[in-house]
Length: 401
Ligand code: PMP
Image (cartoon, rainbow, N blue to C red):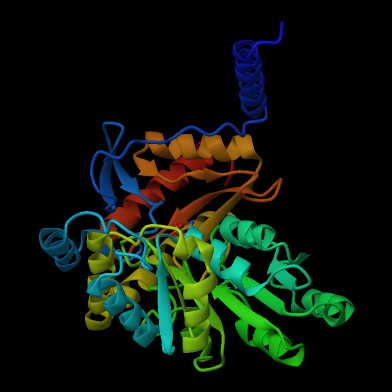
């Protein structure tokens, strides 16, 4: 007899086997930590004091006194939740203030805030293109872009990483037979730390009448003189690039946004389903993001400090003989190759009190497992030095250098 309960047991059996398979190929994931203190350079994970080289809290703003105080004030004034979507009763004065602030920061006419960066990508891509349209996506784009492309039902073509010649070939072959076309790229690639060739992408977008969208999740608060991201980095303000980003990394809060011209933003308010059908971001989250933008404006030295720290760690690792990829962002990939070796190196570092996660497929392509080191403006020189010493001894012990 095929009763539902029996099917349930079969399912558990199937899932358990899948998990065993993941373990056998070293791709099983377990939650690290947990952190017992905030994600500062020095924190406590699982009862151990560690130096954290894994947080996207690049400027330390998630613990900045003013950012925290503003979030607390917002809770006192507004409460903890917004209680509705923006199009119903969740549209507070705070949300609009944040959107105006983001637009000013990004140099655009307007901006729209989503509950997360992931939701922003799903919403904007699926709103802008659909059946009969074409999306061209860098092969290393973030999962949320990939899912947004799938959700859109447009034809999706993936171009080789940062390869504008390949992109051009695809445009030549495909553009004519599609209605709208969207070129989409990470600004800073999340696992590689390298930067999209935005000027060349814009040239192609203009030549082939395509929209261009950049995901500045890891570029906001990192690239550009005032930290406004990839568009500022290349001086491409006012050129119609759709700037998506997240408030959850250098800005120390939560939520995603899209900044662009007023008509685009108005259209997204009407068509981006992840905006329309999701509860508005909570008051403390919105207030914290706004305060973080103010701090960024008033304390530009944080950006200089971040880049000085990145370069110091990068140079140290390179001199030791590690395979580190050059970077202008806050992400230093230390290439290992084999997934198991990457895990072993991460474990050896953890033993020495340095927390850096191993990144394996499917997050990165097969054979490119690595440690993804992220640096913060708030790392002190002696913390960077201690980390370098740990890398040296773990690398030697494992024969990697
Ligand atoms: N885009 C990129 C490039 C990201 O790295 C991330 C977060 N890992 C996101 C989008 C999603 O942003 P959020 O965490 O705010 O959902």
